[in-house]
Image (cartoon, rainbow, N blue to C red; front, side):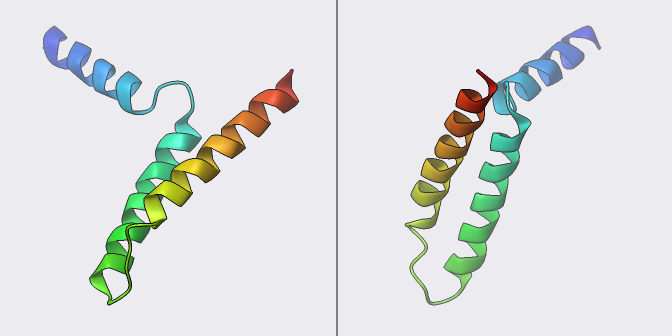
Length: 66
């Protein structure tokens, strides 16, 4: 059981890391991409835009905290 707990903690730290907001943003972006891809609209551009936006928000939040 200890190995299972350790593996769960590793996965949590790897996926969520330092900022849970980024992890939630990526999950939302993947969901939006899946929804758009189910329609007839091209969805390839959603994830790069979302990642760039999340990066900008993270950097802005870090710069404000200093």
